[in-house]
Length: 233
Image (cartoon, rainbow, N blue to C red; front, side):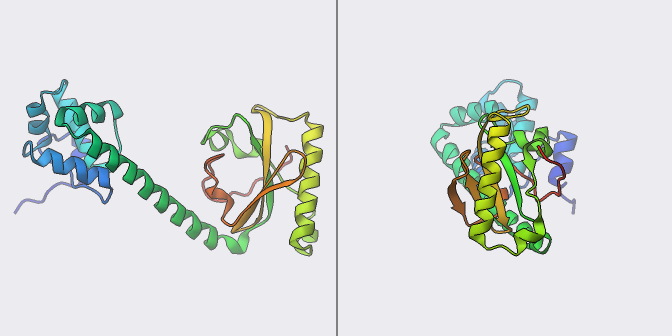
């Protein structure tokens, strides 16, 4: 009995005669269910749909099945050719939601594991930051530590937030509202505990208190785990 190659082997070899095994994401399962009605292999499926660049398209089909991601132009062509645009769009949205849930669960797990080593940290959120810009350009450019950690540990939450607010207001004035290399400063984030962070305005006021690790605030920035960073902006 022959062993079916693993997905990685199929993708690396560019094998278009075998369907990859779908993962647990809805888009993978949806695409495979459609493809199975059209042929016994990715190449046969693509050939029946009469899509262009058939071998390359078959490879792209297999990648979507295996990894739940890939070439969006191909997926659009596949959806239109099969008349399944609505179903595929729904599967994409469900996959996005599931991945977000999984990422959040993983972040909670990592943050909790690192809780014993947590140190409060205060950093800048620039106006023009893209979701991954801070991570890509280097977190040290946009973060600065609050001085005197020992005194912070002996302060209450209210006193610590007041001091963080004063620090933010002073920093904003001293730098004329600009973050080096990133442009205007939008606001600040004060990670005061491993599972809680505050958003602080440029005037030092508390705008929002969020009961979750600061790594999860990906709508404004993207952080991969907690990193020990030194230096003042």
